[in-house]
Length: 387
Image 1: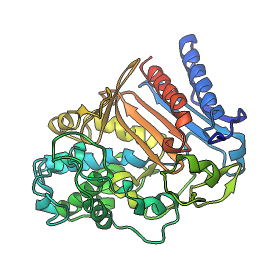
Image 2: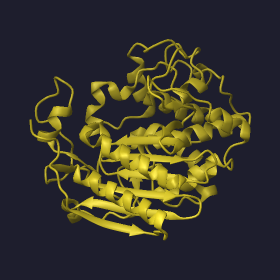
Image 3: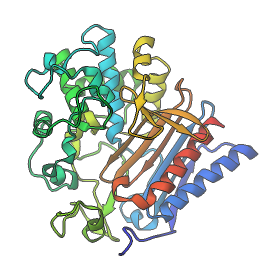
């Protein structure tokens, strides 16, 4: 079997705001080496940004074949995918603090008849991923949307309806299972409770107060400014990673070269409150610093957000829109994200003083051979953050 992506060692580097001193230089060199290794393993590109509360380290690496499309920079905009869930949970908890809704509110109260057993599924279960609802992205009807060959414009309620056709995975609150349906429903609850659109809520409650000028909730595939191009394997190299029964020749839409497809033009805005936002490493770290330092939520709601349950059988845990991950150098809170062409780790320490972002221009789902290299880079970035 041919490898998913051909290996390349040629890369272009862009590094800025590096610090001095033997220990820091060594840590920075290690980050650069691991970023080079990730590209050598087949990743089209990677951006790393580490803020230890005193200094910022930024770097970008990319495979040489991608430079005909763009020159990757640490300040480029990315699709942040499921990191969006942290913003959705933050707004929900702001509304809780204001008395507009409660975590114990059943979905049925705000969205009558939308999902079966909605009276037993609470807002908290949606945010904590314990509702038992089927993930609509697991339905074969959504494959055309993911690969960019969908003509239908999916609306949030339609996506939830697809999920509702499937039996629940378990009784509400019984255990944990990741589902994008939860956060699409949460976005619908926020709109019903507030009387405002989700995009307006994000703008008024997060983007404008924090001056996040490179962050938005898009309505199409376009970026408003300089952005990273995302890539996935072409149809031939994608085939081994698709479910059995997928029609031969199924592949991503977009310009093809070097055994890849440039998927930057795929419209993933239907991901919406579950994963639709675009941003930069710098903007997202500013958001996380404000969140975990208590600038966006009262202490009671921040404690609720950070009250976690185990994810599956691993050591990682999940709160309300945030993951708690243990690394060799310390525990961090934040989220990961993955959409065609874009993979991300965005995390911070408990106080928001230190932040780390590792953004890759390919989704981990279609690059299992990159998983170890990407995790090693993320853990090294956390160690640099805590150094």
